[in-house]
Amino acid sequence: MLLVCNPGWADDTAPAPALTPAPAPIRFLLTFDDGPSSAQHDNPTVRILDALATNPVQGGIKAIFFTQVGSMDEVKRLLLQREQGEGHLLAFHTATPGHSNHRYLDPEELDLSLQQGGAVLRAISGATLLLVRPPFWSYDARTQAAYHAHEMQMLLTDLSANDGKIHGVNWSWRKRQNMLTQLTALRVRWLAGALPAVDGSTPVVVTFHDINTYTARHINEYLAILQEVALELQMPTTSAPFYDERDAMLRAALARTVQEGNPRPPLPGLWNWIWN
Image (cartoon, rainbow, N blue to C red; front, side, top):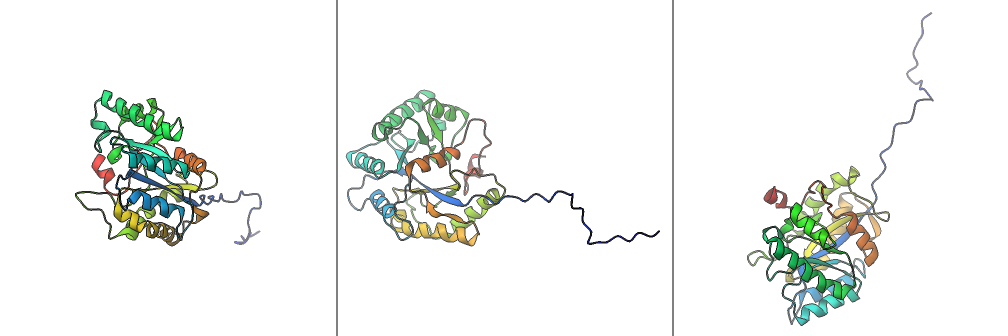
């Protein structure tokens, strides 16, 4: 007897192909380095704090401020108190007189820096654990162990604005393209499920500099750009696209910190090439 196969026949007992779950919507975690500014007039840190509180995109945005506490004055101290009082998160950047690379400090000098800087920030915030961001994104096993010894967890970044003061340059002519390029690269990891979800969203860390007058003048534009490029890349955001509560922000940040023994995470721009 000749058996004719029916191409439409299917085995009802065969398991259905597994579906890849959609990644959690993204939420932008804003961070600022090198502040606060000590300017007496038209202070950029003040302008950024005002804009985060009231802007056309989302009112009451909270941020993490990675602080330079090596040259504290009354203006800076009052701004740190304001940041704490308004629900932002104080974090450590450096406590040396300049923007010193922690890898190039002697162990005793680094230890003293972490001890003194941590004491200043903990006195204002009342926190025990602090987040830390190494200057120039430069770290190694020794510096990371020193951070952990002082109850500090290291947070790097996913996106970084080209707004740092380098030889007097503090502007960016390609703000939108820069953010689009960096978020495009991150999208691959997001789709692959390589980024942790916290409280139902995927934290995306973004870095600016709150001592930069250009950033202060354009912060509302940056907020809009982040939303625009996420929409263009079909990366849905949560209903509140920016963090607006300190405890939720801390949980998100801790999920993105670099732990001892972890693979070195990619950095935006030229930093991977510089350190590798």
